[in-house]
Image 1 (cartoon, rainbow, N blue to C red):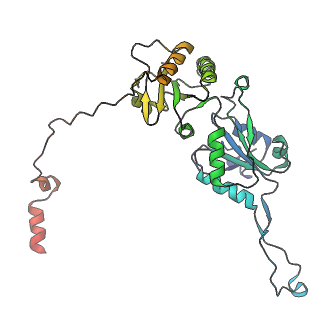
Image 2 (tube, rainbow, N blue to C red):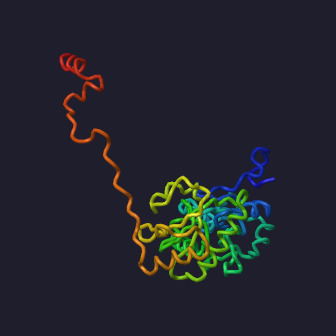
Image 3 (cartoon, rainbow, N blue to C red):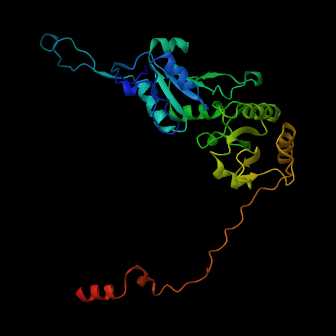
Length: 310
């Protein structure tokens, strides 16, 4: 079962998607493993307890144990968990979850709690130096510090470029658009990732490399001057400083070599950014006589009648 309650329809809920602003509670190791099996990074908070006596509470001066009994501080949400939930609601482009379950903390190898980042196992490449996880270096959580940490650490050497992740790529980025479907195009995904990682390893510090679903981001292809009607074709583009570049006309189909040459040409300043053509004016455009426009909306005589009544 899941970790949300006893009602059967609430068992084993799917992981919360990026963008909903909510942190999911993980009640079991199975919950944890399902949450981390995602195309994007997973941010997991580990806490020794969800609730605790309010550390800021003070016993009233006139408290009388004979009359009032033994004083106890009110129970409140763990302040660290409260801070975590507030950050999760603000950083909505990341996937957050938390747990205070002993078996989950044991799986995380977390004896004192903490904040952990797990990179997507689907894009992780130990061969190219990707680490599966990072631990936030402080016990005090602040939104700005966590945001900066995640933005700098979340993406592997070649990661997912999507509506949720593209803000993490702040510098020039080479994006490979293709049929990014691990289930239905496993060999095609493997083919692209191998060549992208090989190129990315040589471009470290110069040009980031990412992959994207040409279907999910079809609305962006036009920014690069790339065709939007070829979902099964592997396409490349480079975004840099609000400008977009595509391979030169007549460039060969995607391969490791053409990818490296595209990157080289960009870094050498040999490419010209694509400029979208100005939209054509509507047919019959130009200045229109709007003097009778009221008639189009039922004006005219009715308006005169209204004025007479007024």
